[in-house]
Image (cartoon, rainbow, N blue to C red; front, side, top):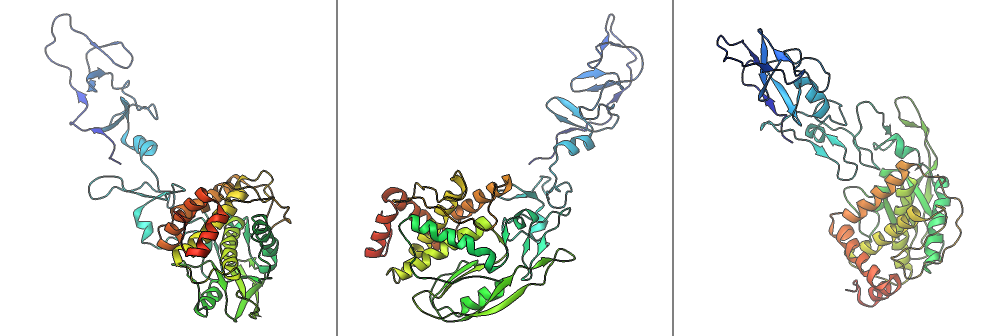
Length: 396
């Protein structure tokens, strides 16, 4: 973005001439009256009474030696900056110009939040869910594991294992509606980031989305610390009084548990559950040794399908038909966590989570999703899964 245009050719006040041609008169471009003897302004290719040359924004006379222009209208430089110079959505100051005199800023690709480039280096926190930077005039909630959560995402956040159970049942109903019922009872636990990382280190199989994993499908016997009771908000917007307990996982089948990071909004938690449930379904139905691109790709397709069903279902509680499924008979779900009429922000949040899946730049999760989704749209989910079972790859 270029700096504002300006005229700075010296003084805008012109002395009256000593010699005037016979019959010549000066007409003010502002009031359209004749300019007699005295001071006048010569600007914008015409002449003005000093009191008639006014700022488009504040309507006060411009007496400075420099002024800015926009759409053939003059402005005080300060008024032009106030109206046209972008402000940072984080610090609320005017975004500074760079060494070349150009206004340079960063913008989030989905939320279009504009901010000074310096905030990428000064450790300004981002919401761990929606990725928006924390504005100076807002408070983000500090979770026990160091993550920060904006208050809008907090509104639908799921904080403990018990609170997440209805949503987990809904994901199971979603899979049953696709004729992909997971028959084994797989425990689901909400955990802190440290517990998730420790479980990931003890897991021999699986692929993990860096820099941060939000869910995990376990196949090993482990003891995992789960969140038993949701924490409270204490002083300084910090979470306090979290109750946890160790949970011993016993291997009774190919999957011992599904772990999900706590403190995320319902739609994000649901999409993570849908992704991890697909890992469980693949392991329980004889899909061994798939490449990361195929396994993570098809899991992302199911997460995206669930988000689609949630965002476009009329009631918000039934499993909706999806254009990417070959069979999608709807089944009634129990009322899920934090369910109710969605706010405009939650609808936007759902679109953001879909955008994250669609635009992921990683090979396994991003490119795998795009190839897998293309195959499912072309051949249907069932034929795509059959092809993966036989060949270990997506149909083309």
